[in-house]
Length: 307
Image 1 (spheres, rainbow, N blue to C red):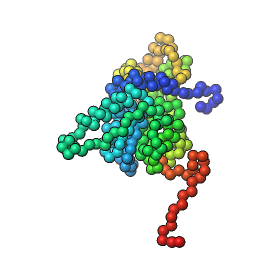
Image 2 (spheres, rainbow, N blue to C red):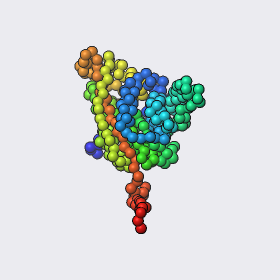
Image 3 (cartoon, helix red, strand yellow):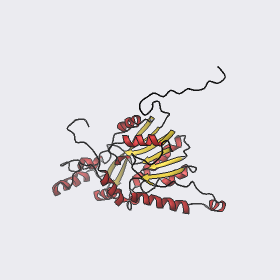
Image 4 (cartoon, helix red, strand yellow):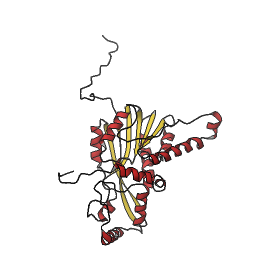
């Protein structure tokens, strides 16, 4: 925050979990944005050389990205983690269905099996029940908006990755839902979730120990027939404002009607726009230069062919 008097932004994690629990049965019908972002993340892997042995889908939701990861890296074990038991239960069911029903004729005839998924884990992203250096790739699609501060999660990802491992993620930037932010009543606090700036994410990656973070931003615009359909999609995904200082009620009928009228003035070609600032990033874990207590690490390489 820029001033000491500004309110401290924090998310209500218990509320976020309850909303995700309720959304587990509806998100798959409303996650068009997450599916498009996953496709774009997957395209980025075309240009990254990595052959992971063990992959974690961090914040996997209902597991929609697990088949994509298994198809790209068929020799890898794919692990899923989420803080919502209901989401994870659906991810497990999806994985079992894909594993038992998705094998081709030759696989069945010759007894070939895809890489067996590791157990799905109900876990906090900042405290994973995994050994140090046990992962080769961490994939996280639109999980970061559920965090007040990404640094503890980035540190935990760095701990869990082996040297040469890759963290790859997507999140939402500050321009997300800018139309909604501009038109909703602002009395009694902000009504739209805040999102972390790309540069702050890059700084947090470096602070967590990652090397050479690469960050990109692009803007996607979804369109809706009416405002209620946008709200329905946000509710279906569990993606409503969960700030601890969020307003607890509406601002009166007149304020709400004024907000709807203001949003209506944005209508173009019969549709209402909703902007999403998509941030994609990746960073590598390289060999440490210092110990955990700050002492420098000196590595000696044997000399060959000489004394």
